[in-house]
Length: 365
Image (tube, rainbow, N blue to C red):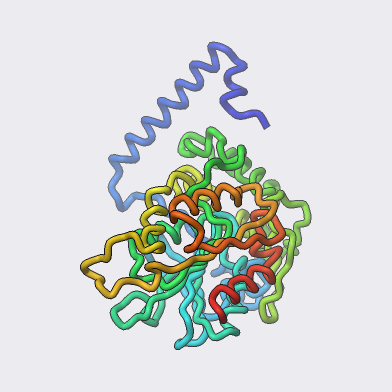
């Protein structure tokens, strides 16, 4: 699909005037928006408001991504909106926080989370808990971060190392040397200039979902025609069969803010150029960072080792680059273990058994 700018450029002088008009309008719109009272800030409703109130509990349970998919489901209000949180497992078990990526949501962790809870762990996907994870009575927690979640994990570790006991990264973003060409789309960096309908088409093409799909909450969402970044595998979680491509399609159909969130994550999220934070985290892990005077007891992360699991055909995260850059930051390989499993960027779903084995071996659980 040719870009909007390319299409306009073919119109010569008219294109120049049109582009200028678009830019002027965008700047004017931004100027006006900056003068609006904070109370007028637009809030995009999630399916919690736009869909679920219209469904019975029985109907909601048939969704590709039902609201009570995992145990311990609840909503947590934050300054930036509402997050869905799941937490379950032994209250006395090893605490593990799982942070997913920018496209595939919480259900991708189903087999990993289920395995960890069976081994006695307390898992949480996203944040917030009735237990003490960060207070003075907490013994800390461990993190598993996938893709964007890996970049978030290392940035968090750089600033709050005393809260973390151990880190496992699955195809981590953060220090990527490059991203796939599709992620470099001109409009992904200037999404406020682009009509929502056109932006939706761009994102849908990148994700390989059915852009022309007409949302029907109770449809059979088994979509076999998906792009390379959407895993082709169903997972069983309890009595619920998880169809990951259908979950991604459902998210695209019903989360009105998803496309904007995805594009802004590409443009501004911790996907690339996070070397400074990663170096700080690595300095803690290899023992070179000075001890924080406010936390003289230190951290279990200090002078430790972490695990990085990579896909052997990952077209998003180049394993050899991650390995080379981390060894340089750590001053060698004695503080990191690398494991490779079959699969592309979605290997945590397609090769979940291998991932679970490496996690279990590394943590000796």
